[in-house]
Structures are given as structure tokens and as C-alpha cells.
Image 1: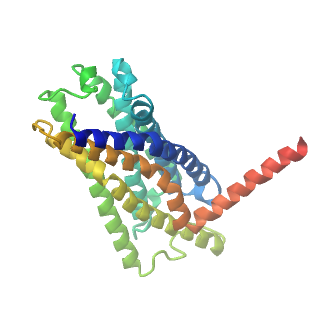
Image 2: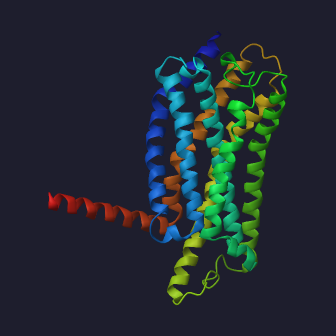
Image 3: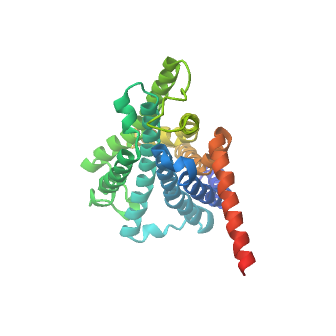
Length: 327
């Protein structure tokens, strides 16, 4: 192993040993906080909030399958991978990794799709942004991707532990997996950018970002409609800012995943391979880093989210004080 390869490997070991545990702990607590806040108060009545909840669940899965796995194998276990002694563990790890990534991108697209519908002038599109329709869509999304992702553990019987449970070069499944990887790397990003453009266009065409009566559906109080429109507008702001951050934190991982699939048959000499692996691992770390970023992003971008967070903390404090007083 060359000096460059050793240096890059030591840097990556240091990142997984000292940086990723902090990201894992913060990401776990902040995504649980996201789930609790979006499922209470005013936000829970908006289907977009439930898409955010599903996104946080996907991020938690990513923290365990991507972050915790790398911490154990590279940071704490001197590179010894327990999944390499069991084909079932190996396939389960790959399945969970791919499922968490595709679910995150799927729900990010659904968040933007919902915001596009809510800013549309079409009443039929606005009606699709409802709890009834959205809950069925969420159920279908989880079931579909959990079943479709089964192609990873059961679709290719010729995988081996030595290959990391990845399809062998030249096989039929390898061609399918390459196309699949390219699609899930490029298509969601294209859809997100397109929907951000359409949302921006809808808002400009309306003359104002959100008219207070645009979301008034048989409400008896104008104050309630204004509050609802305010929540909708701030969810739009959160959605757009979040997508920008997602693209920034995922660009290296997506690019190098695509690069490795396209150049899998290329012969790598010298320090090319360790450098490429190092950059890919850094991209993976940035992908994991995106998980704890969402909570402070929501806090900074939305006064409604901040208010719900304060009220939830207040309820926890009052509940804690009642327990102390009754003790």
C-alpha cells in the first residue's frame, strides 16, 4: 500500500471514529424531534408534515445502515466486517442501505410534489393534497419500495461474500443493477429541480406567495385560514431550502456512485483507486451528515416550526413538573 493510500485511509478512519458518532447521536435525536413536532399541533393536519415524518424515518434508517455500520467496521473494529461472515447479514446490510437511500429521495420528491399541488391554481390538484389521499400514498410508497428493493438480496443468487454481496461483473443482474443505480441517482435530482422550478413559477404567477384565502376550505374563521396559509407557505420554504441542502450534501455520493458503476470494468493503477475510494467515502459521510442538518434547518426557516417546538418543550416541562410534584 502506497504512502498516499495509507494517509487517506488514516484520515477516513479518524472521521468514522470521531466524527460519525457525533453525527449519529445528533441525527438520531433531531430526527426523532422532527417526528414528534410534525405529528403535533397545527402541523399534523397538513399532509406535507407526514411526508416530513416519513423522511425523518428514512433518515434514521440511513443512520443505522450507513452511519452505524461504518462506525463499527472502520472506526471501532479495525476494518473487520461481520457481514462478511454471513451471506444473510451481508444481503440485509445492502438491502437496508439501498432502501434508506431510495426512501429518502422518494419522500423528498413527494414533499415538493405536494407543495407544487398546493400552489397550483387547479382545484383538483389542490384536493390531492389531503390527509386521506396522502396516507394511502405513504402506505403504498413504503410497501412498494420495501418489495421492489428485495431484488438486492434475492434477485441475484450468484453474489459472494468476497464481492461484498454485489453482483459480479458481466452478469445480467449487474447490468440491471447498473441501470437501477443510475436511475435512482439522477432521476430524483432531476424531479426535485423541476418541481422547485414549477413551485417558483406558480408563486410568481399568483402575484403573491400565498393568498390568505387560497387555502380556505369551508372555514368559519378567517384567522384559521390565515394560519393555515402561513403554515403552507412556510412548509414551501422549508421544502425548497431542504432540497438545496440535500443536493449539496448528496452531490459527491451520487456522482461517484454513478462514476463507479459506469467505470466498473476500468483498470485502476497507482493511487487512482485509493483516491477514488476516499472521495466516495467522504461523499458517504456527507450523505449521513444530511440527517442531523434537517432539524436546525427547520428551526431557522420556519417560525411555525419554532413555535410548535417551543410549545412541545413546554408540554414536556409541565408534564415533568407534575411528575415531580406528585412524587
